Length: 489
Ligand SMILES: Cc1cc2nc3c(=O)[nH]c(=O)nc-3n(C[C@H](O)[C@H](O)[C@H](O)COP(=O)(O)OP(=O)(O)OC[C@H]3O[C@@H](n4cnc5c(N)ncnc54)[C@H](O)[C@@H]3O)c2cc1C
Image 1 (cartoon, rainbow, N blue to C red):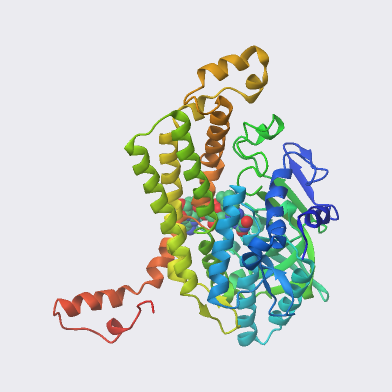
Image 2 (image 1 turned 180 degrees about the vertical axis):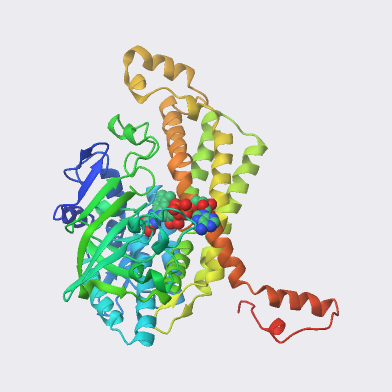
């Protein structure tokens, strides 16, 4: 396993091409715009060496029997699924933001299952190839970006029907030694401070889309790969000091990129799907269920920070009213409901034929659908409690300027038990965790709400529910289909 320092140093061995605000980033480790994201991912390495968190952060490789970082593991039990959620909540509490490593974790777990299923039906050897790759990832404790989302172009059209064929990643050449792929992956969390990316399809595919049925692993600095770093709300504040960013150590969200793949060569031992379009839907929904499971972990960790911050703001403001307690209780209820859903889908997980454990799909989709509402509502209540000053505070530079500091200390003071600087720092943390980019992540990360609704409807056996009602209402004509059992055991 790598520790925090080794992870950060390891990134210096990679030379990804990264464009940010009209310039090339020389070093993602040293650049002040990207460093906070490196710090956040580094926590996943740091805590693996902390005896207090060893049980959550590490596990035993089912391939080698060695101790590994949990983020590189394949789940071996429902206990592993539960520990994943607890680990994500705990790291979310410590970073107050996205620590990025779960996407690759989920991509690896879904690839483990889908490659097994493809091989069984098609006689291919993707699963063995993937196991070898996984062992390499575990041995070197690599950070893997999970690369599913394509730019998608016109949403009403399938990949092969797009005006521009590159709007979904596709195979442009099949060679004796490997394949060549072209296209791009959008919204790529933690990409520039990962070692590799694991590419998988983003949607179900038809026969005409065969070239879009591709899964493979490539280095973030492979020839032909270009990254465009995404602009976030308030990102330039990182250059101005440490108060106005709110979270100067770890920033907000995951440092996403648009990652362009200009005819990238991938050798066969790194190709895990090549044309098996029938398995794309299963691949996507397996990945999505694992990824939706996460949101009742990491986002609840963030909600813990937001709730704490709102409670502290009420104190700093000198407000002791009962409505604050009521709102804080509401926030706690929403956070713990999301956590419950994540624990539920983990406890109800099942063993796959590949031998790994998979979450309960129906319950996993409730996690993320709740998140798309509750994180907004938790943020709304936090804004209510904090007051309007989180939207109108002067610049940090004016607080540091002796000419104006006095005005700010005087007119932004509230409860005399706390300094104005404490009040400002807490307000800035809340502002940045509950606005702009941070909120959009809770909405669209792991899929838009409609994607969860489709899965909920599909997985919940409405016919059986109708049969239950018909029986009690003493209505005849109950078909065999009506009587199928669907309850969660
Ligand atoms: C902060 C952040 C981090 C992310 N990290 C990653 C990552 O690390 N890896 C990764 O692969 N992806 C990542 N994603 C991508 C994420 O999975 C997508 O944003 C999500 O799937 C939605 O896709 P989209 O953004 O293209 O929105 P769209 O799909 O364009 O959705 C916009 C709206 O259009 C609707 N819509 C879209 N298509 C249709 C249709 N055919 N019919 C009807 N309605 C439709 C949707 O329901 C939604 O209401 C991340 C996203 C965010 C915001």
